[in-house]
Image (cartoon, rainbow, N blue to C red; front, top):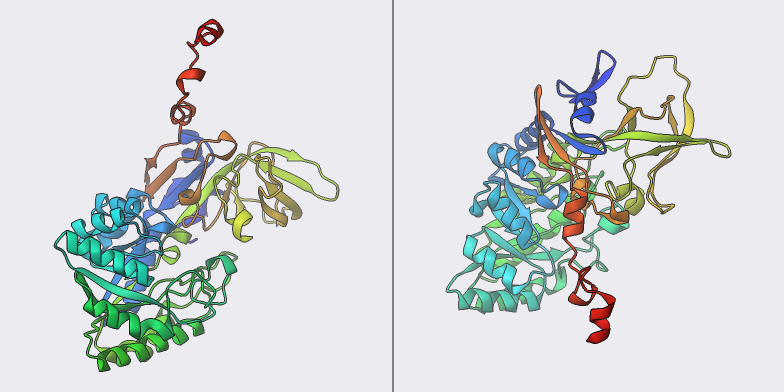
Length: 431
C-alpha cells in the first residue's frame, strides 16, 4: 500500500489527506489511487514483455468507469461476464477487439450484444452454450471467435468459493471432452474455434497450479493442431493474488517464466485476465468509529462501514489490514479488539481479536487492500446506502460514483394501485 502512506502523522492517498476526503464526502467511502493502478498494470505488462500478450482487465474486481478508463488508457482490454460489464467496458473506452466475454450462463441476448459490438472472443463453457452461440451468430450473419474454456482439474489451493478449475466446479469443459467438443465446434455455422481458455481460480498465492494448468493447455494445443484445427490464441485467465496481510505476493516475473516455459514455444497470441492484482492494493475503505463498546474480555470498535459495504470478511473470511488515519504514537499500547459494523448480523465482523493501537469514537480508520471485490459487491442490506467511490491522482480527488441517497433507494420501489397512499379505506370498500 505504498500509495497510502502517513505524511506528518496523517494517512494520505497519494498526496491527499484522507481526513480531507472524509470531510468532503463523509464515511464510509472507497478511495482509489491512480498511481497504484498504474504501477500494478505496468509491472505486470513489463513481466510479459516479449510475449504477444493482451491484458484484459477482469471487470468483476471493480467495474467503476473511472477505474476501467484508467486501465484502458494504459492499454488494457476487458474480461466481462455479463452484458452490463460489456456495456461498462465499452462506455469506459475499451476497444471491442480487446474484450473477452466469459461466464457459464451467457444468455442469447448477451451473445447478440457482444456479437454486435465485435468483441475479440467468447470463452464457451458447455456444449449447450456452443450450440446457442452458433444459432445467434448465424441468425445475425456474424462469426463468433471462440475459445473453449477447459477444466484441467487442477487445485488452485485458494479459498473453496473462488476455486474454478477442479472437476467439481461449475466452470469449463472437462479436459477429456475438449477434443470432441472442438470437433463439433468446427462444424457449426457462425463459429470459429481458434483459441483455448483456462482459468483455475482467484487469489492464487502459489505458482505451481498455473504451471500444471498451462501444461494441460499446451498438450491440448498440440492435439487440436494434429486434428487439423488452427489454434493461434491462448487465454490463460487471471488469478494472481495479492498480499492482504503484509506477506509477499506472487512474483509476476516468476509467473511470466512459467508462461514462457509451458506455452512460449507454441507461437500463439496470449490473453491474460488479471483483476484483483491490478486494483486490489489500489483502494481503501475509509470508515469512522461510531462507538467503542466495552466487551467481556475485549472491546468492540463499532464502525460506520458494514458487511454490505465490504463483504469479503463475512463471505470469505477475508483479511484486511486496519489502520487509524491519525498515526499512532510509536509507544502506543496495542490491545486486541473486535472491529464490527452496525448491520444486524453477527457475521458483520471485520476482524476478531485484532491487535490495534487505541482508536477512539469519531476517529477515522481504513481497511486496506479494498480496491477489488469491495464496492462492486456492495448492497443496500439493512437499507444502508451504498458508499461513494473516489479516485485520487496526485493532489486531486474526484467522486467517481456518488453515495446513493435515501430518496433514490425509496424511488426504486413502486406501490401497486391497491397500496397507493391516495387510495382510501372507503374507496377500497366500495370496490
